[in-house]
Image 1 (cartoon, rainbow, N blue to C red):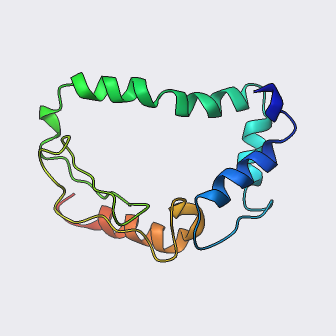
Image 2 (image 1 turned 30 degrees about the vertical axis):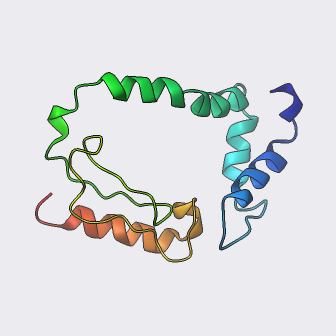
Length: 128
C-alpha cells in the first residue's frame, strides 16, 4: 500500500475510469473518495474491501438463506448481463435488473438523478 500513498487521486481515477464506458471522471468527481483514502488507514480499508470477497463468498455459501425467500429486491445492475437473486439462484427477483441510462459500473456517480428516481419509485410502491 505504501506505493499508493500520495497517489490516491491517480489510483481512484484510473480505477473508476477503467470501469466506465460512458464518461470519464475528473478530480472533482472523485474528491470525496480521495479524501477518504487519504485519511489514516483509508488505503488499507479500501483494499480490505476487495480482499474480503473470498471470505464473503465462503460465508454466503454456508449461510442459511431460507429467510430470504420473500425479500423484495431492486438490484440496480451495473451491466445488463448481470443477474441477481434473493436466495442464491433459488428465486429470481420479480423485476429484471436494469442499469440507469448511460451507466456502466458506477451507477450512482454516472447518473445520480435516474438512479435516485429508480430507488424512490421502488421504495414508494405499496407492496413495500
